[in-house]
Length: 228
Image 1 (cartoon, rainbow, N blue to C red):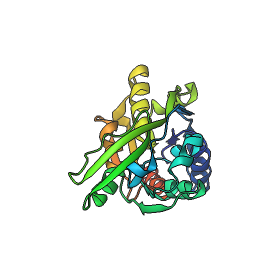
Image 2 (spheres, helix red, strand yellow; image 1 turned 90 degrees about the vertical axis):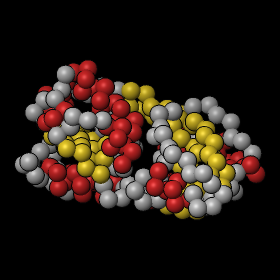
Image 3 (spheres, rainbow, N blue to C red; image 1 turned 135 degrees about the vertical axis):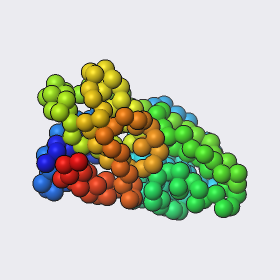
């Protein structure tokens, strides 16, 4: 069985690691970045028809300013983000399947003015003609390094799980910095745009059927069990 590497920040890393270990996978890795809040000012809720949110980190790190926007429905990238929105006191308008771009395309059949709440590093979106999207940055990812133990294992390959574009960018930086071979590594990614951000040269790149941790880990399990 191939080793599995998880790179997402806490608290998600521990949740994914526990799930993967219960699935019988050989889990390695560490968060390649920590998340910290960024000072921001919420605009008037009356200027918008809804919120576009691609990460539960928005509700973990958005602070008191989020309270000015609770009357707006949240259009969330997936179930985890939608659950975080509800716990923060928001109503969920739509929950996406297949990434933030797919969600935006689904919303594009009517005229809407949306406020995107996001991190400093975020996926670039193609905005449909019917929509207008403004963005506020609520948090940033502070980079960390791969451990020496993980580097030693990764030199022989494995399966790497990518929950975000930020993780994809950090992985490329670490592989280039340490001269690791991409063609020995299979990637399991949470959505098509993250696959694009991961770049080329990997042994294989596979996208989960839905943007959830359970779907992503099921994909990773299948990759860990294959020899080719």
